[in-house]
Image (cartoon, rainbow, N blue to C red; front, side):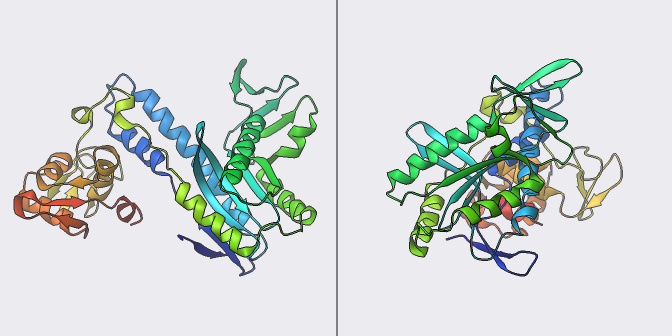
Length: 339
């Protein structure tokens, strides 16, 4: 099982069974936004979607600070779990498991203010206009119901399933206009999340899962997880020829940089780099395919030399398949993005 042990502020162990990382569909959306030409009909929509998806991830990332204060050995933590059921798939931003209860955490990263009215509507007002959002309480209630059915499907013991909606920005103004108890109980700022979890721990102290069952459930969750795919170019009626080719300058964003004298050089700002091709190769893998040959690399990176393209690819130590002119390389996106 892909588990990662992290230490909280007291030096105690927290078990991140599925640790925080940017989901692939968000990386795909960002890559497409970078590679969509300014002249494209859907450029603004593609860029806005990538921005909104990444904003949601940043909200989830901010919760890691709160989670590190949880007591040792009590929680198995999963970030971004997407599970199949008879209706399709349902996604949980965070799922926290204990032997006594499970917790679903839906995270929202919305600035300004959020109103909850007597009609069950969630909205904010900007420049005199009302902007409606899906009701996060109903959203997390549905997640609760589907997760409960999922547990029953695999024969796991019944357990209290708690749920909270956390707004991750400190400057979000939450208003419970209808004075609805459900809103007060479920919706909160991130600084209220930890006290809420501690209250659950005090209330639910009877173990309903054995250690073995909790580990079995963790394995099952990882096996059943189905990452979302962005849909990429097909969603926006694009093909490979529409994509902006070349290496982007990390300083000014201009494209393409030119390979000269063993370095990438930006013709706009003069910046140089020896690794600027790595994000470009990652974009290729995310949008086009995880296998690339020399000809494809030359075209996408905008280099003329067969030998230059070969050196740039081989220095990344990708897995290779085939010989001579038929050789392909399997691009490891994670390796490229963590450097």
